[in-house]
Amino acid sequence: MTDHIPTGFSRRHLSRILGAALALGLAPAWAAPTHAPWPTQTVRLVVGFPAGSSPDLTARALAEPLSKALGQNVIVENKVGAGGNIAADFVAKSTDGHTLGLMINGNMTIARILNPKVPYDPLKDLAPISLIGKAPLVLTVPTNAPGQTAQEWLSQAQKAGDQLSYASPGVGTVAHLGMELLKTKANIAPVHVPYPGNPQIVTAMIGGQIQLALLPPAMAAAQVRGGKLRAIGSTSTGRSSVAPEVPSLSEIGVKNYQLEIWNALAAPVSMPTPVAKQLSAVISEIVRSPDMRARLFQQGWQVVGSSPEGLRNRIEADTQALGQIIRNQNIQSP
Image 1 (tube, rainbow, N blue to C red):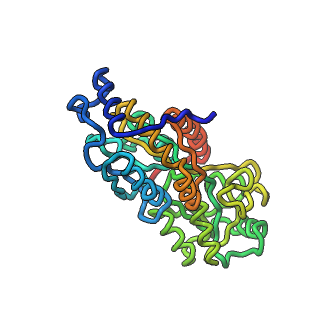
Image 2 (cartoon, one colour):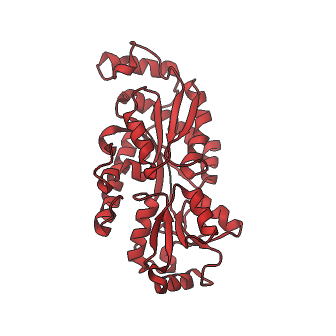
Image 3 (cartoon, rainbow, N blue to C red):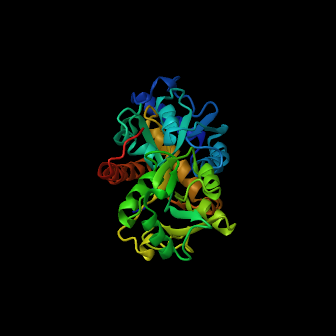
């Protein structure tokens, strides 16, 4: 069912909501004084991956329309490392009331399952705002990889065993967990090599340092069109609308394999619930607009736009599914 999204957001409306929250004792100290409008200063949108990465491109696409809607500047800050968890921890611990995070699946789901020492708890320390977009990943290889067809490549990869290496943006990212699951489903055994982000992965694959990777569809498509990489298959159950030219992995013989990446907006848990809901409405309205929908589609995202409750439900489902991969494969953070 589609979430009901209220419309007509403005700073005046949000100020009323914040005032009501204060009256009920729901707002934290940073919300004072009573009836203060929100936001009252520049909003930081923190991203855990490098400039040019898929989360970074989404954040920068959102920054301008979000700034217009809020009546304050929205700036994107990249805090790279630990598969996005450094940025997530920064957002979780922020107390200025004006810090948001553009995050991926892993940061909001299995961070603590993967590593109990992660300094924040996704389920307790982050306030879900809105699920922005979702997409499959695309299994991508260099153009000179063996085999003329995807099936031939798979056969060669099965014979190569651990002589192949694959990259991901970090331990515990969906690309990493997805490849570990693929190893069992496709009977291949490439060795994992983590990189800071997908732009670096593409460079390494073109340069021959690694032999395969699961990439976001738009990034994979750009390299395939440029003749620099080959697409083997997508992690969707069938042909995906964001990569219709790429067969699903099930079409080349990898059965019962499906995986999605997604990105979402989150805030510190201290954000008052009424404010989070109204901010969610703004984000959903922005991403569902025709211009932004087209822009995000070009980046490889199928737009969602959800309520905080809708995002919370997705977080819980993915925590269970991705957590099962971690337990089955005995994956541990370094």
